[in-house]
Amino acid sequence: MKKSALAVGVDVPWVTSWTEETVIGVRPCATVAGRPALVQTDAAGFGRPQYSQNHLVRQRQTVLRMLCPMCGQPTQAGDRWTQVARQTPAGLLRRAGKAVGLSRDIEDRRVVIDAGSIAPLHKACVDRSLRYCPHLKADPNVNVMPFPAQWTVLPLLIEAAPMLETGELAGAAVLVVTFLQLVGITGRTDRDWRFRKAPREPQPAS
Ligand SMILES: [Zn+2]
Image (cartoon, rainbow, N blue to C red):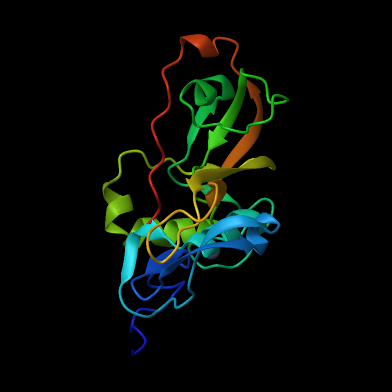
């Protein structure tokens, strides 16, 4: 298969999945310290980009290593920006069931930034994607904010059971990591958090 004329990390976000990248099942993965995770072959630039779908392994790398999902290069403290993340008291995130595994040290009134599965971008990459991406241009929820210096990572889990070729179960189900959720922790608190409305789900960048 011929390589696409679209350049990965320039025309298409680095984290975007391509049609030639197949999900191959569950393997211990270095992106989650060897835990079982859903993995996908690596053939970025082949086939067609699937803008609404992140590549499983590259997504985990962006969050783990703070790589910009647009260009794939590391971001530095002071140049980490979110585009569509939502600020919310941690209590509301918990109430919405979107903070599974969030440490109890982070109190309910603590304002956090739920970036969903989208690691922060370089400012230059934010500006470029806002200029060229039709989805972002049309998104009323775009709100460019600096990402806090502190954050926590929550693995998003599914239950998976080993299967034989015949379709029979071959063992007990285990919890398997799919994507990593990133939650920024601000220095602010919201005493009246109980009276706020639940946050909207952040949309994937494209
Ligand atoms: Zn970048």
